[in-house]
Amino acid sequence: MKESNMARADFITSIVLIAFGIGVLAMSVQMPGYASRGASPYSAPGLVPGFLGGIIALFGVILCVRSVRRQGYKLGITAESTKHFLTSVETVRLVITMLVSVLYAIVLLGRVLYPLATGIYVLVFVLLFEYKLKVPFAKQWKVLLFAVILAVLTAGLVTAVFQYLFLVELPG
Image (cartoon, rainbow, N blue to C red; front, side, top):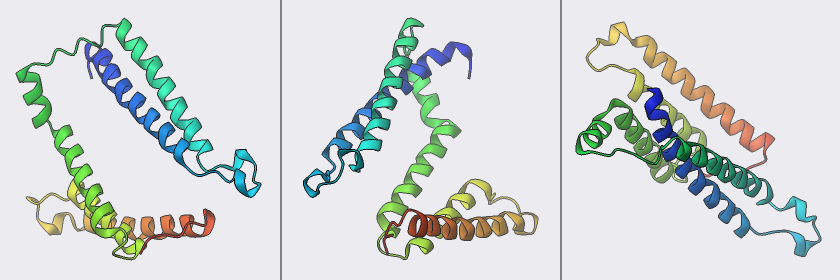
């Protein structure tokens, strides 16, 4: 990215970070506490997320002030820049990532065993971004093999970590 665009990118990023941090902070405050059960207020499940949300929002404000000083608020949005943004490879990849992730969360989680859902998600994700439809399969069978191995290992490790280390009951 050009140095001239960094102030604008910082400004937009700061707005997103502030909104995200405030959102996390607001949701963590709404989480139930265990003080009524005689537990320490420091054991409340929203304490760490609230702290992290506050820090993220604070850093977003600092980034915003820095970018405003460098006139990052002058976004220079034109029809041409909007068209370029919407048709750029990066934007298309972002939209594909969001769609695949939303489908994973809505369609697979809770309906299919968690390890299988996660394995499918990783497999589809890798194949979408690494497999080239115009290249013969014989030249890229390693991509498919890599995707399958990565999907199996990721699904197994994530499931094991959440179930046995964090003691989280997984959906499905």
